[in-house]
Image (cartoon, rainbow, N blue to C red; front, side, top):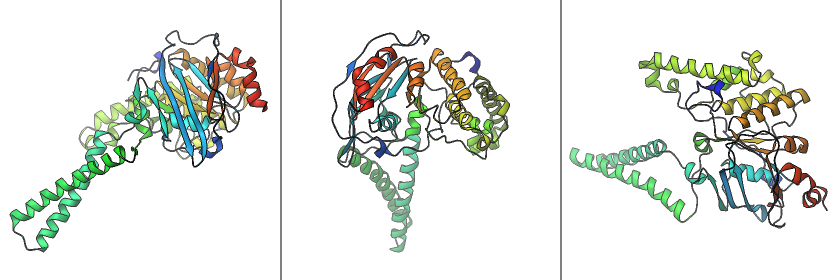
Length: 373
């Protein structure tokens, strides 16, 4: 996949292992149902921004999520524009973290839908065909072995043993597809794989960084791209030159990402020795190794010292100008107002209003929501 950044032309194949587990307690964002409906405030956003923006790349429609009797997200509807930065703000308990987890696939909505480039994310996150083949094969072999064992214990002939094995194989495969169909059709339960969504181009970072502390900065970055030839035993044994060539391409790309983020002086430093701000930059770098379309940032400047904060914000704006789309959850209003082209305000699980930073700053409803008016 070719990077949007001309400096990052030698990329690895798309994929992601940056989003491996959810980090937020959904209860922190739970709120009792209520609040007013959304009204859109129009106006000009901050200077800059890619002129390719304007089209919705992510669409959120009537999203709802409850935890027991608590309504965390209540009919949220909004869009993320392509090549723009969208800020998601609201007082504590507004539903921001839960919405973020629904967008990134770490939670399933009770109702409503998230669409990425026009396709439902629940469909994008379904198990891959390769995963299905693994489970079907395992189930078939298991029941095929059971059938053959039972036939052998009964003193059946070789032909009957083979027949029992084939019947067991078919039964196992049918059982796998059958239980999945029942779960999806009647129990409304679909297996979700957030990493599949990352492979399609929508990735997230975490408020608490997830770097591998006992690996170097370079090694952390090189883990990002998926489907690397070196992960395949056959390729390692029989195509070592191809494996080495791809690894060098990934290494070159990682060097370019480090230059972009101004971390090249820390290439061989262990990630566990980095400061909080440097870890945030490293996590952004791992995202860039995937070359995604949409980047979801969860409080990217929290705990970052002022100098690195400026560097991080400059990098985000630069990436926006190169065509990346962002959604940022952040409590620091100065950061949100500086970075965002559009600001979405949530309150009590609903979208209160949205518009440009200048208009949102003066909106009395937003002021009341924050001050409890």
